[in-house]
Image (cartoon, rainbow, N blue to C red; front, side, top):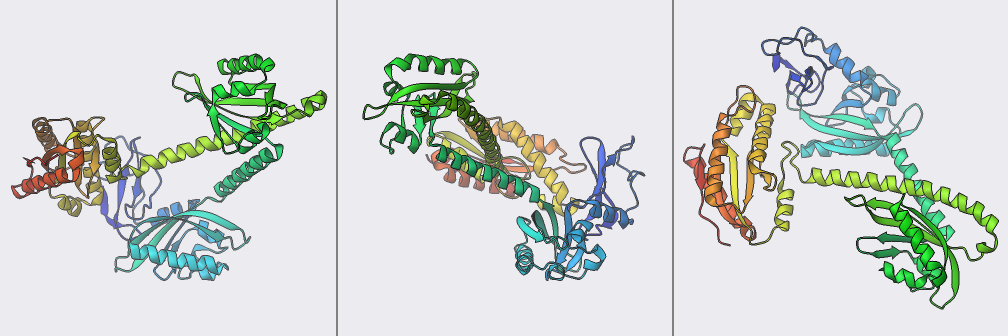
Length: 505
């Protein structure tokens, strides 16, 4: 809800608005630069006629000034030449100055690192020219201590009321996170050095494939060709001394049935027939859906000489096992963290950031997995007069309309049919193994449903829909037919469904 057409005192782009959250709270906010006031509870009466009396008067800029200065993140605004138009206390502390003293000056007046200063200026000018928000990782030097700090900065180009270029920067200090990653990397290096120095033969047993992968040192210990980096688990039995094989296999099976930790000392036969004593140990690191072990990793070491010194072996064994447990735990944590990050990046790459439905990358991935001859029907949907929604109600209302359309499309599509945001206000729904008649009924039902919606207060929209039937192999041709049908629906008055001629497969 816009209040008194009061422009944001920081970016001067949008009017401030009262934003209601899902947990009955609200705050003052700006859609352009994302400045916001404190979150406070809603009053008992609904917020529809007038702003709640709990909010301060909008002309009181001291409140927003306080919010910005109390932020732990650096907040600043510059012009195209890099001069400060706005800065908060966090930046002033970094530069050993005050916000008032910094206005009208540039980084060069406070930062002795000329390379950093040059990067700041070139970077903001490039972003202003591109006209797009960017997230940048950069460094800055603390003027009082000389310490280099790391920041992840969101940089948004904006226009002043007089048309001049400006840029808003919100920088989050990630120095401690950087240092934590450096500690992890250093520990991983020490782990690799320790394993190399210890002369460990590493193995990785894939139980589903019954295949063991191993490193060069494993081959060296047994006098085997180091290029042969894997073998079937059954081959291992032939390398174990006859007198030790039964006990060793019993110990391994007991580990798999118990806590998943295995260790055993036994004799193995080298390629030339020589016997060596090895200390073999491993740990189950993965389980299948039924809770059964599916992967075990471990190592072997040559203990032939040490078998003559049992007491010394016992002491060394304790130290090595404790060290390996700590290192293995660190490796497992690192692997799990990387897996989570990779999964999150994969999901983000396939989704439209605004609506949450798929993007063209997801569409291409879906098509690549389908049989070429799979019958499909493409439903191509365009929101009628969408520009008027943005012009009359603002881009926030337009975003809500897009999100509502996407949500309803997803409900109609079901789990297996992809919904794609194809353009600004265009969406695709791809139906597999549906007849054109069934798709037509679905499209008409969807059109009628959207016509009855009010995606946001006081706004109703209609959609025009084009249909075409084809197959995955001829997807582009089918898409063109659907696009032409959509064009016909637009020309014939909008808010209707038109079925195009089927493409050839």
